[in-house]
Length: 150
Image (cartoon, rainbow, N blue to C red; front, side, top):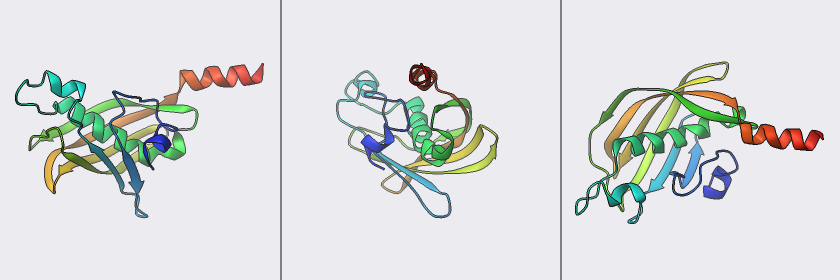
């Protein structure tokens, strides 16, 4: 999936759309890619003269990559964080770096997804963690459905 296809499934838009490409292997492993642009809002002040991607943004890149694993549950719905656990930051990510995420669903119960994800740059682990999501009705989509019914 490219950015245009991704935007059909998740509500994120610039400057918070943090995934350029998403794929899934036959074994259910998901992959996401995002190139950190030189002008990213989160690098301008973090830190001037020594820009690096904040950890919370790395978690968001992993989370948006995980949505590829949940596509069957997303029509009319929205995936929101329920938890972020066991996150470790191992190496710095900077403008120009290509973030490559590998993720999988560890457990799925109804609309709750427990996922593991790791983010690498040039083959080096930069961030990893366990992310939990709840799939809930998307209020924007619910409004569209009500208009169609009228």
